[in-house]
Length: 103
Image (cartoon, rainbow, N blue to C red; front, side):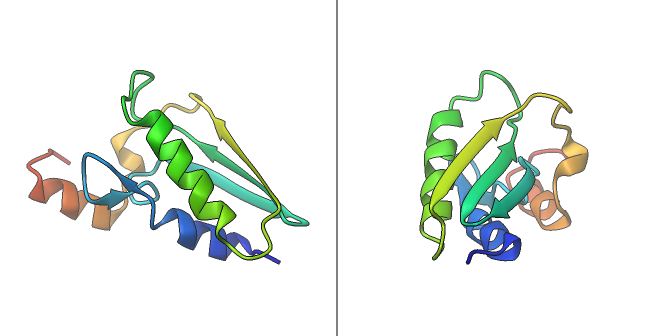
């Protein structure tokens, strides 16, 4: 059976196409739940108009489905609470600084 840790690890390999940074490090993943192989992931984006939204959701779904024991995946996009830069990990801040993005 998949564990929350294995699912977080899989999501940690999904990168934002604009930066070489995972959606976990960007703080886009709010919650991961698993019960009997059914996975629910709550995510957000930096803005409602994020041009990479569909690609990121597709990649996240594929990463989760690749975890042994996953039988169902539901990705839920939420806007509350809104994403803020405070959600970015320390590693994420270092990577963004390399791109010249203020942190």
